[in-house]
Length: 306
Image (cartoon, rainbow, N blue to C red; front, side, top):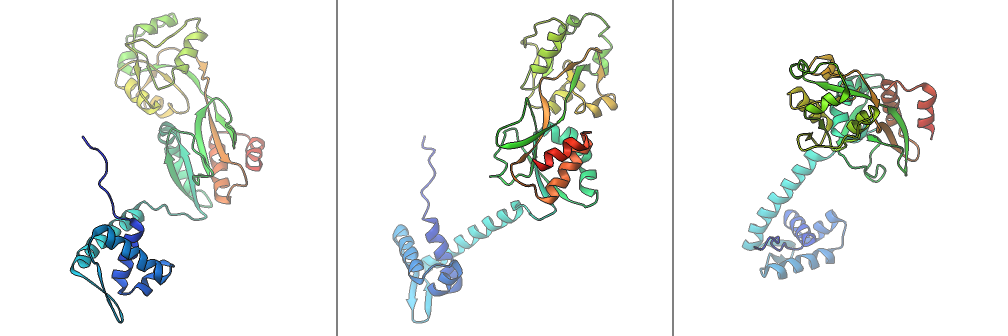
């Protein structure tokens, strides 16, 4: 089966044709596109050759569309209008008070979203545009002001500060937790364990208890931590509470502790920025994020002045 795309006419020629058809002359099209009259003529000739149809009748005071040209102009006008409409809806509004922040989904929904209103409405007000993704993007090349990520240290090409660490402990839904009594840590292995794509948290927790844990067929893996919490809340297994991300689930009673022993998660959360000076509103958002993470003033100032 042939999955190749159908051949398209040359797009630069279509653009020149549409301008000439809309404005009624090659000279006006040339002025609109900031190219020469000859360039418009060559592009139209290229399109006519590609289509095998004459598109314009040349007249003393401009050009007139042929019937073939009229049909093509209707279609190209609709296509360009659709593209312009889509571009307008997706175009990001930029300005001094707009800050672009990238983060992984779990941090965005579990830590940033409950604080978003306060971050935006403090004085001076600002607007945050989220870029949600797992990859470590090129911040400067992609116009990102700040990034919050989960990792094991600073990344090259960025300035980084550790926002917070996590002391993890096992939790379960209230119904499942009623059947789990106090006892040795290995008792938890009688139940499925829920984790995200990184099992280092569970491995670290069991290692602190002298147990070599390896994922088993009955354990459940979900791509992001917010899904881990949902799965545990629905009784699909035990999860590790990772404060402060798990704060709401614990505070509302959706999840409850089943073992008091804690372990420091091998990964931490980092605030990153591109090298170079931050824009004023990006620096202001960085201050608010660091204050919410309870970083001391000296650490925050050092990050802003790197």
